[in-house]
Length: 563
Image (tube, rainbow, N blue to C red; front, side, top):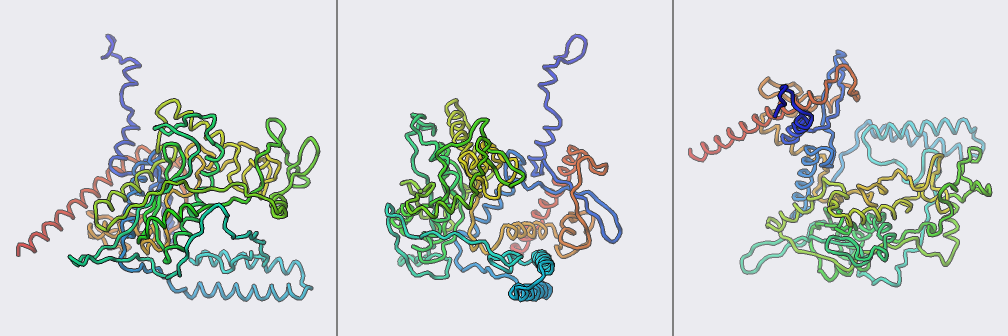
């Protein structure tokens, strides 16, 4: 209540909702991005400019609920469409255009001339440098023309290739052997016919794989005895979990004998170890799945990182003269990454830095197309896609928070990649070392709290899952909405005032406009709150138009049936 003077107290004012936060909540409730990106569009012909807001496209609900919800819905559609295909998906690239062929032909001519001059041994270095620069420019033009990949596989623009370290592919003695079937090109699983009803069933699998145990845990995922819980192994397993998943897919396809397609999601268990949920097209016996999981492993061949050589104030320093890190107490240059790997290759008794494996728990469930189980599994796969790994199981009690802190402590000084700054702690220069590196302060997302060691992609989709890319699925949704509103996607006009076409859709794919990022401080960029309110109004108008179109369509269908 107001005070006798008619003025509200500070506590009363703080209890009132903040208008800006309410605007964000209303925007999120109506599917509007709360962190829009402002782009300035300039008409090349007239020079007219216009500022257009586009969604931020975040996949995290904590950053933008509307964009994350759309991304999750899109992934669900992708999963549903590809899981139980009855026909092979068509994945065929478009034929190259004349422009693309022309760029490749020019690249071939310049490459042939450079190789000819280099083979003579009497070529002018400046001439070779000029040809190398021309090859680099041609590679950029080839990429800009719309071709995927590079015209050369392993060689760079100068014609040299970096040697690839090859290790023995002999299987470890402590893992079982795997059967291997002849491979076929098919991706669609077998269909079974019920002899009594004649109904055709096309079952697939929903698989869950977990990592091994690091010690006994309680029901909330925290260790029973933190002093004996193997946090180092848990950290290393999380860092290399994505490689283990790749090995599992390779082994799965070898055993199955066909190109198994999958849609998988990675999320943490309560004990914070990542595990995998995977929907696979087709089915194989569960006994073989357990055998594949037991025989799957990934060896990390890195230098040893068990003995700490530098810590605290005693750290290596960057020497500008040599371009290397040196030991300040002895002046010794630390071995480079390649030198450390050479020493590892030369040691016949060398052991891998780490071996990551799956645990014994392997769950596999048969799922039939169109069943409630299939819909439930799809919802489960998309359940945590919009959350950070640390948000999936938020710490609710003190010991859960302490469990997270101990895992982060183990991750802080653990090398996450060949370029990780933590290698300096163990007396080795990281790959492609540069000045300013400091152990314990690696900028990789694997060391961040929201990732807890897993820096890979949260959603894993095989190339022939649905025969479409995520952009194709998004375009299908857009085409459906435009068709329901009666808007012709091929029409570049803005349409009438009743069903205006969003300007970004009409021009972003055309070459008559230039786009640049607009800064929030630019005078022609409205405040974010004003842009949010405007976007909410446009969203409500589009929703009303879509609802009207749906009612008209249902009414027309009813009239046709009645007639």
